[in-house]
Length: 467
Image (cartoon, rainbow, N blue to C red; front, side):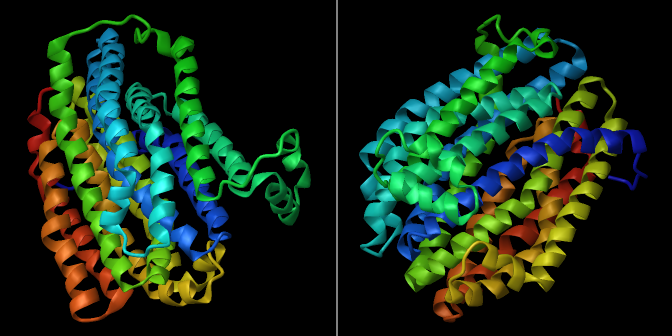
């Protein structure tokens, strides 16, 4: 891809679409960090159990990324072609896929939650709490996958503010429910008094709620996910959305198969890559529970930092799909350059903070001295990788928006399993570098992937893809 100066109008369009997605993603991560901070009050074992449990649940829930990608790719392309009714059809297909994927996942997950925890954990104190967290969490699979289908639809028709509103509300519900369900009636009062808003505990006083600890965190997430789907559904009645015919159900096996072909590589890649990350956690878990809890803190901070690139990437994917639908690849190329600029600016700023100020960031999420001490060099590594991750993530979304879902999926899986996991194990266990070696190995995933994505997008082959 030859160098092209950015276009101010397109650059503005990218960031305008991206900002609501960034805020919604950041709100989700901030609420996740709040969950972590709440659970960390229960001790290192509870924190490690929740961290591993949420990661293992995400291995399954990440199938929804494939559903979202398929819905968004088709929707944005039809938007550019002005075939508006097929945007609604893409949402219907996404909901069907969510249902078909959720049923077996829920049944298997709830039945084998203990066995799954035992595969990835060794600490006998952590295993039962992790299994309890997953058992409840698996009941929310359908809500999460349906939410991804809605997200792909609203992003594809450039209504990203809807996604922001829904996510922020559902995440606030999640945090409030967390406070009551984790700590119980007595504990929630003390919690809100400690942070200076005791009146927030009033709604928990009408009934004597028991403290559910880790189980409470899982149940709060399931309820909030259910609300998210309800709120997304209400927005279908919005006048700006009605023209895409989301209420007029239409089944087409051809369109469904097309979306399966688009979404399957991404969904499979997410599951396989996240399984790799679960194995990464298992490697760290063999080092110790403190190290596992430290990694949970580092991962959540890293998760928050790369969400802006995800938002920018999703916005770019919509614009690339729309402009290709309009048969205007030059505008699509301009959108890519603008997206890269914004991602590097935002993530680069976060990276500098992690490199030069980790001692200020980590204590926000844990006051454990061992976690802070061992986490500082790990967060500095994440800071360096921010610049590469900005490129890799953004261009990953660009390719999927153009309809090329197979290549980025294969590249992501290959760099994860062939480079990242072996190097992390070798450095942390064989060379006995511990948690630091494990996170150094993380660079073998992020840096090569960014280079591969840059080379692929530069080739320009994505401009010829038909959807």
